[in-house]
Length: 512
Image 1 (cartoon, rainbow, N blue to C red):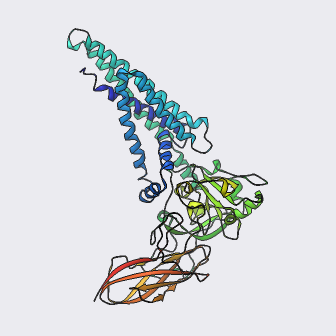
Image 2: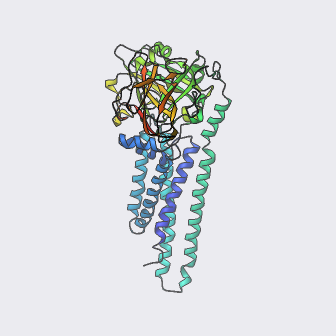
Image 3: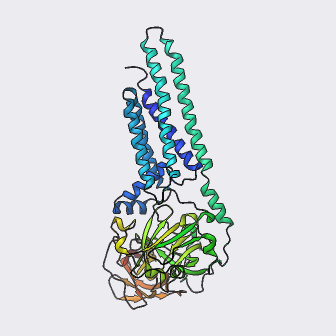
């Protein structure tokens, strides 16, 4: 076996790293949001079956999604090493491998909304980087092998060997330089964050928490959820970073008049503000994917009325800047509820993670059919003519929220003193409202809880109750009653296809 054999996989790996680094730098320099690796990673998420996608999104937060990117890079490392081995005897096979990988990246990029030739440029740069780097390394490896084949002193191959290692070092340096260039040039988030901090929107005011909304029990979620504590659910590996000056919304489809709005156009309109609770369809009974904030934006009803939807239209297909889609009932965007294009959250411009510069908020609907972050396109259409991201994965077409309640105090499994036990938590049913909450101890009679006040039907409400517990183990349940006198069902249902149901139940142990 020739001494050069072990270096062919390294050559393939180094060449692969050069191509990836150059593609990353090209994406940053050309202001393309998705480098090829990120485009492929988000493509994997898009093609993942619904239950698996739900588990992954519920389980992993934004940073943990990078595990997928790391996994893709690990697979690529193995393939690059293999291509290096192939190049030793079958150069065409290595080239074919690189072309196939580039083809996968092209498919992922073209799957994004409104792709352009610029979006494909990083893929082309990466492919050329792979081929040129491997050609140079392979040339000097072959010279090394030829030098070893010629009879003579063992050190005759030394100059060629040194040249190979010098080129390998240079290629590694190019990889590092490409990565640093991409890092420096890829400052879109920094620019967007800077513009967000400097942005002042007339009509947006700081929130003033209404009196009487808290029951005063430690352990209950704050009535106003801070921005950094608000739950996050999305499919983006890298959050879109759109400066307000670059944002535009197109409203089109089955309308008499197509509308295009810039950010300046939008915020010149009347700003509406309201307390609105959002909760995710993936929220299990008693889960934490729920929060309440002071949202500021422009009502969609007036904007859509200007577009004049055609008779028969019943849906709006919303598209995010990263390509995520949802189908929203047109009626919910045009009725009396405060559906809005939100520009601020708790008195500040939207955080990037929550959709800066503009997102959609629709009280009474789960986010998977309404809450489009980084929204850039709204097509007025019909449900029979469209599908969207989550409906393609088994969720229902329309997603009105379900009445829900949970116990936060005491915690499940807590040890409590016997006697009077204070129970507390929250309940919500946006666009309808909560009129009552009841708790049950050990399957006995339902006891009414005391409710805090709320400013509207679109927010959650805190509740408090006192029950008498004797020493031993006990079970507590809670249910809510809406303003139409309907009681929350105890029938247990999974989050798929349109939200979980059931009474939140906890166990406690009382001691004397």
